[in-house]
Image (cartoon, rainbow, N blue to C red):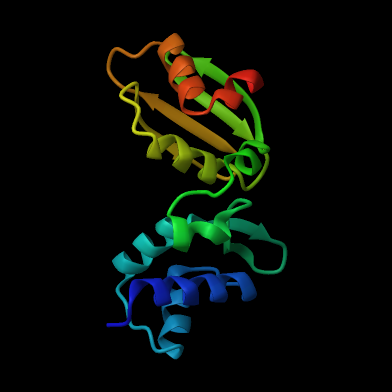
Length: 161
């Protein structure tokens, strides 16, 4: 088996230079590069790279690196510049204790990952789409708890709310 870092570099190269519409297509393309992996491994690698799918007018949805700074994922494992990521933040709203963050297209999954990586006890998890994030609060967490948790993990975010 080839090293993960090399595999991640190949995945980045493929999805950055080609229009790949499915994991099966990416698995086939990787096999041509000499990388035979399972779908589960590929899924973990795409998550590590924070790759998501974006709309392409020619092919439909294709894989892409989902936010500015994602090219640094292999070396650091985290976004190099949260400010670039937060540039995509538009608004936050609440329904009960659930929070919904609106972002520019392509920013939601990166911001959701940033939130998840802080492992705040007030936040059970996030679901990030293309331009919307659902924040699921932990049991007993209030709207104010979520706002405070988001402000603590990224103080600049509190100015945007």
